[in-house]
Figure 1 (cartoon, rainbow, N blue to C red):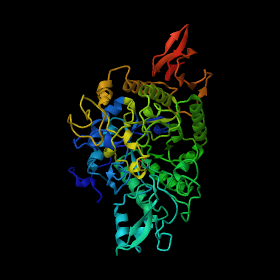
Figure 2: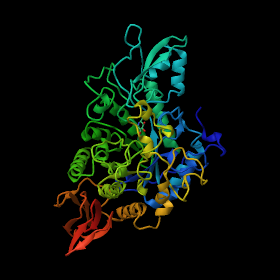
Figure 3: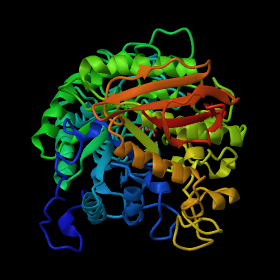
Figure 4: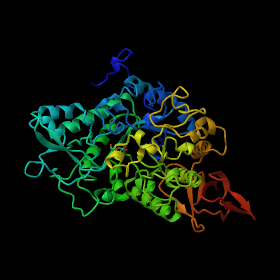
Amino acid sequence: MTQNLADASRPAPVPAAEPIAASAGASRGWWRDAVIYQVYPRSFADANGDGMGDLPGVRARLPYLRDLGVDAVWLSPFYASPQADAGYDVADYRAVDPMFGTLMDADGLIRDAHALGLRIIVDLVPNHSSDQHEWFQRALREGPSSPLRERYHFRPGQGENGELPPNNWESIFGGPAWTRTTDPDGTPGDWYLHLFAPEQPDFNWENRAVADEFRSILRFWLDMGVDGFRIDVAHGMVKAPGLPDLVTGGDQLKLLGNDVMPFFDQDGVHAIYREWRRILDEYPGDRIGVAEAWTPTVQRTANYVRPDELHQAFNFQYLGTSWDSAALREVIDLSLDSMRPVGAPTTWVLSNHDVTRHATRFANEPGLGTQIRTAGDRELGLRRARAASLLMLALPGSAYIYQGEELGLPDVTDLPDEVRQDPSYFRAAGQDGFRDGCRVPIPWSGTEAPYGFGPTPGGPSWLPQPAEWAQLSVEAQTGDPTSTLELYRSALTVRRAQPALGAGTEVTWLEAPEGVLAFRRDSAEGSFVCTANTTGEPVRIPSPGRLLLASAEAGREDGEILLAADSTAWWAV
Ligand code: NOJ
């Protein structure tokens, strides 16, 4: 099933793409201050016009990303998959799904990216496979005595006839985390564990074949020339011995991220990352691992980025913080304080393919969480989103941008139910799982859908785009100094040029009126100040220095500065 580069049109063997020299970044590692752009391949650019984004589409748009000014591109999964969870259900880890292209396309994409000075990070999904993975299919076919069952978590059920699940764990997508199998003779058999959809059986990481296979998969992609891996559910691979019941009085999902669970953030996962770090370090060019780890505290997140483990971990505590100066200051301090002892860069992220876009989160009242189905006050949301993005890009460390946020895209909150594809929406009976709203294909150009996402005006797109998106396209925003796209382009240019921006571990908080965050960052070559007014009113402050950039025009009054409502400004000092 595995595709081979040699199978494709080019004669074999193909040498791996040249790595970008390690020195082409900050001296202590390029990832310490990298701006990493997340491409969600099915929604980025559709080269063949079938309505689904693909790797040739991404490849053709790489110059856009270079010009935007990002350092690296993280690609969500493009592997062979039945797409039960948009590719996070992998059937073959070494093959590209035909829907996205071929291994040759992946090879070409990596080469082109490197030639443009962009690094490529691919997604790795080690907690679970697809139920169509060859191992799982054989485990089912061969019945209870199959040794392949040891590679997953198969267990007899409880109750007189095994009719009850082996324990009380619930799936993150809703419903029990166990599904009962049918034996080859047609009788009800054992149950298997799936922390997500039933089509995503969890691997048993105690099994040596599983660990061996993933070491080999890492090498496969490292040999292809990728610069790193974003590790899906990095906190989930090791389960508490004996798979004990969760002792809970209530909704298990509410405990996620707040409590240590028998299936999440178990200390055993760290041995896996120590091994993987050794593999990454064997390769030239500073290859990295990024943990998607939901942990109860930022301090526990720091465990994933100890010096002999991974390089970065997503800062979900920051993503979950509302547009409020006190809350933001607290999470910024906590994040920097937690990462300092392990020497890892802090990361900052506001949006991704799993949460309501921040332009829509900030358009709604705070405290609604990250799955929101109401559009809220769009104008307010965009104003705050622009301010929040400038604030994020001023903080010390590495920042993540999710495709389309540079266009100020809101979530599409009114998708008709019949077009939705997020499995969590269906498992939660439409009460949760609104992730399709942030996955709508992005607009590039033109006045007719799919707005340049696909090659033909009037052509298909796998989710419908709103009519207003014609005004939000890359083409419509390019050259307009007031557009969000030009704000991001300027911010990334200034970020590269300002010595006090980028990598670091400190901010110095400055005195500021209530509702305003003001901090300084210093370097040998000069200082930088960021001011963020999180209030809905203009606020007057003494001038911090020379204005570099602002998310909304700052005024002057009696020699002082008038910060616009919900705005961030950058100053050279
Ligand atoms: C996290 C991914 O970001 C999400 O999209 C996916 O559904 C789950 N992990 C399961 O793989």
